[in-house]
Image 1 (cartoon, rainbow, N blue to C red):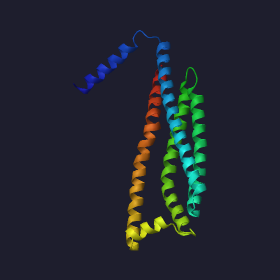
Image 2 (image 1 turned 90 degrees about the vertical axis):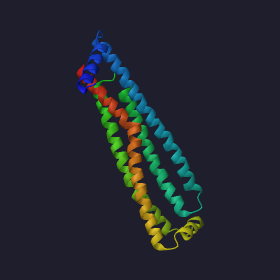
Image 3 (image 1 turned 135 degrees about the vertical axis):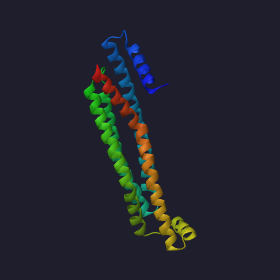
Length: 211
């Protein structure tokens, strides 16, 4: 089938589906569609909130009960950062509920919601990538100044990295692979949780503009 024929058939089908329906009917269908997408966005935010709570609990336990000074500082700092991120997620959930909770979501509300989500996703990605070198530097600094040696780490280093150049190569390869992996995983993760739904909301906004 030629591409032009396919486009014609799709256009004809859409015209047929809308035939006999009033503007109010079409608006109602679009409203249900946008409400469904907003609901999915809220579900994604709830998933992140619960994951964040688990991270705070785990990091907090390490920060309190670890017998090593460096590990207590490391996990305590990131537990506090996770709490700050939790408040951001809760704020975003409230904004999403406010803007998408009206009986008839209007185009302006949807545009505002898309802008907020896109800005959040952009900063989320930037923060995640910036956090990788910060974590490594912070861990190195704390490990270097740790007053009490950690036997497990010392045993691992002596077993596999008897020569300093081996440790240097391992560290470079590890950081490179982790950075590349984090880059693509975060891209996929954010698209799965937020990107697909914001694209659908944009399509709804375009449909509302045509009404």
